Amino acid sequence: MVENNTVCEQVKQFNVLIVDDSFLMRRVIKNILETDSSFDVVGEAVDGLDALEKVTDLSPDVILLDIEMPRLDGIGFLKQAKMLTDAVIIVISSVTRLGSPQAMEALDLGVADIICKPSGVLSMDLEKERSDELLDAIHQCLDDQ
Image (cartoon, rainbow, N blue to C red):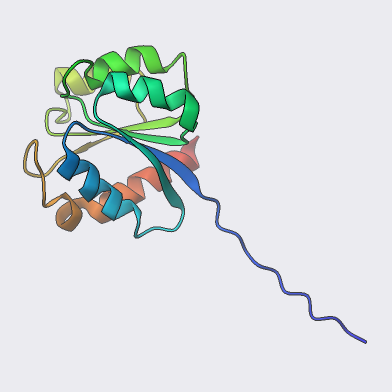
């Protein structure tokens, strides 16, 4: 008697923490991630302080981080986060154009990549304009680690 062995290939899921002070931007980013079964959004944070509180509890594999936020901005978060997590951190921001002081500092602090919001602080067109770029960048950063 021959048994039929089926192999179910399991896709590794990466836990993601989204850090942005805009509820709408967090929603847009979450919608993009939900189109890819390898990502599970385990939490959202409204600023750097909120993210620091959540990062140890949630143990994200990936952190998507805005730079301009109240209380503690993205740069302040980066300075403290390296002691708390080894997650891949990708900046998604309107102020971190390539070569800007914020981009250079973020890179010096260990971010894996920087993606510019296409139309400023509230980039509702991020989903339309940059969703493939965002997903590709996350996968590339995870592959490189």
